[in-house]
Structure formats: C-alpha cells, structure tokens
Length: 163
Image 1 (cartoon, helix red, strand yellow):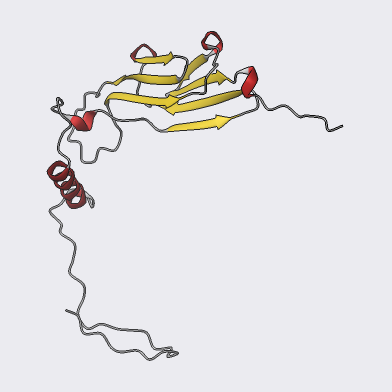
Image 2 (cartoon, one colour):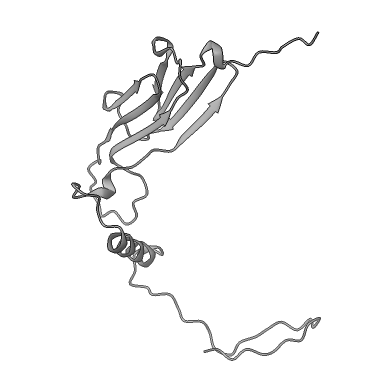
C-alpha cells in the first residue's frame, strides 16, 4: 500500500504518495469487461433464467417516453435497427401492447462491446377505460415508433365557470 504523507486541515501542501497505484490490466479488451462478467455471474446465480426460457437475456423492453397532452397520450418508443414489418401495436380497452423483434446484424469483425439490444421485445401499459381504439394511430420513422392514443371525452380536462 502506498505511504501517504499526512496533511493538516487548512494546509496548502498537497498530499503525496511514494508508490504509484497499480496499473490497470492490459490484457482486457474493454474497461468494463470484468464488471460485465461479474454482473452476468451475479444475475445468473441469483435469478437464473425464467422458467421455460433458455436465453432470457434476449427479451427486453425498449426505452419509451410518454407525453400527456390535453387531447392524447403520445408514446415514443426507441427501436433502432427495427423494421416496420417486425413491429406490432395492439390496443384493447385497457392496454397498449407493442412487441416485435430486432434481428442481430451480421458482423465482419470481433464485437468488443455490445450495448444495443436485439431479439424479441415487448412494452405494455395500462390505459384508462373508454379509449376509442379506432382513432389510435402509429408512425414509424428512423427507428422511432410514435403511438398517439386519443383521450376519451370523459378524461379531457374541462374548465368550469364559477357562478
């Protein structure tokens, strides 16, 4: 362990050490490789794959922004690399369900770090009663799915005049 030079409070002298800190391992291809390995071992040991699934890390939930306006709820779902035909949007009386898959693209080299998800995904949320499913619309542009769910008349805010 390094020998630290004690510094009194209020002193302007910097702390010094005589030995340098151990150098990081150079044989690791990523600075996060050890953390990733530890995390995978920890999750697999304590939680394990869900019953009936052999590769549970492939199912995931995409990032979703939900915006509420006076007349609708707007869901913006990030799906980089997805194809329009591989995404399904379903609305029932009380649920919005978005699911699909993003295929892993072929690569020529060795993948050193992988942060983008692929495989099957699903997003579900509960909607208030009375949604008119005929007026829900969805647009897919450049990996961003935008679903607009109009608010029912009973859920819209209305200003009441005080007499």
